[in-house]
Image (tube, rainbow, N blue to C red; front, top):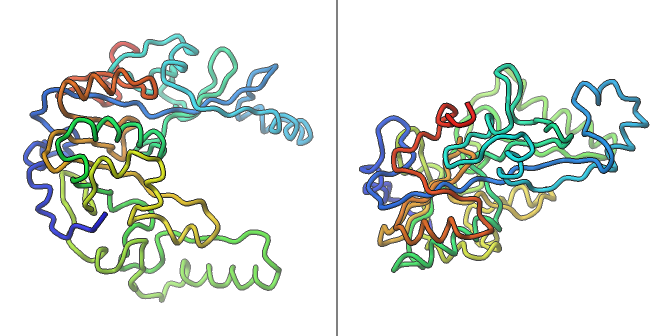
Length: 318
């Protein structure tokens, strides 16, 4: 995968997007919405406590329950079944889990006592992304050639001029003298009113960080050469040029944000994983969409080109 320094690489796609934060490109034969997985937490013999119950609980009892908690991935279908709602192509998580207007939809306890956590927005795991990429590679004449675009705003991806880095790594359990040094070093960059803006390096090189980006409605992306076949194995993260090596140097696992946009050289399809959406959209041929929907590893639905994917789009569970 090589960096593409020419923002014009996405001109053809820009022409298919609406001007106001256009997300789904127009003009393809069919469209699929792939739902991002949620999480469910349970206890073997009782309901998961609410936040208020956790706070009132004696510490000893809390520790016992923490050790017994079971966390698992959850499908939207499982959540809909638990809350007695209907799963359909335009379903919205907030309404699937019956969230009152004044309450948080990110964490909801179902009538059966299980606690559901909302799907990640703009993020899916390497395994799931690889499953999608396998279908994409099978439905283009150029599976080894194309463009992968990563949103510039992912933490630490690109460098910038600022008064402090976009993120900091904290070391826990250090020696007292080292702790004081860390506190001092952290205090100065973030709180010194006389500090002047300086170049803060990112994961990508300064050359890439300072170069023009692909501009689409409401978003800017860094682009790389990459065919769908490059992502067909979950190990793709190890070869991504935007792999988060600074985090790895601080003990974090190997990781890389999956492309937010992906298309092949022949423009047979486009995959869009918008940062504010809890689902990924694929626009392409009817055969591709049918294959995605039929894959048991994916929770996918066919949608219309002009599908309403906002909160209000779920009229069934309104």
